[in-house]
Length: 436
Image (cartoon, rainbow, N blue to C red; front, side):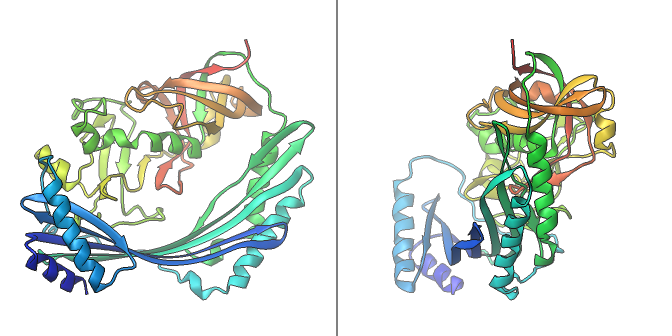
């Protein structure tokens, strides 16, 4: 079918054409107070067609297609190309020399009865409600996704990738006196048997109860340890500074820093689309470029930007396999862990802060300058141990300076739902705003 579209496009005068198709099948379930309140089944195929007309690259996207609207969309692609005034590289990729093999289990979540999934959610909700500090469970969610991607172009390239996964969580509301906190823990799974309602509930309860009774602390400079989840979230906000697009638009302070030290010598930031622990594995990007493991920062030295075909051409470099969703993005981007346990990581901290929650990660961050000021909560670290919960504080600093003052990196590594990974990270000193 796609080859017919390509032939049709070429007959219309389009020099080169690429069809990029994504079929997403998903199931979403929600339980509230023991009853199913959401059951959504979706099966959608979307297509992005990129074509070169008069040396200009144009794009159209559509769903629910037929041969009739394909012809119409190709005509629209030509009109879009005619209207373009910006002169940028127009490339349809012929293909990489080789592509990595993805070794991943493709579990058929559809083979598990829906009733079993609903029962798991009901058990998860009830286990959390059984705790004495829980006043309610706001929502209990389950979602599974099956994504198939096909890329075909006029240069003979034909690639496919397939991914399946599911996740579930419940948001518990915990109360002790007038202190009210919420907590949840997202469980990602590559097969349904990995979901254990009781274990998931225990993790959420432990997290929620530990937050109760928090107090503020005096304003000052403290050693700060970010939990693995929180440092991954911080890293997520700053991924764009490593993009060739940001360098082209002068939206990153790293434009002239390739080959230079930008972090401590023990800092390695890696983009690995095939990481064995990742939930998403990509042998090729949306432009057909082979993906590969790459050190973006190695031993503190910035090795170079992530590139799409366009930015690679502009900077006269090789594409890195990071052309996704019409732009540039990382794939399983993470800070490399060490063998240091969490207990050993904090053992020398006499008076510090362990941050487990951050609020306003986008509003409170200036990506280009690296400045951040974020509402936070977590725990006080006293004499090398977690002591008591802390709330109503603001953590401030500069991301680039922080990378040069990382005192320790833990072993408790994990990926989040966005494909960003981190262990716990110990920053030598950050300003904490609390009580006067």
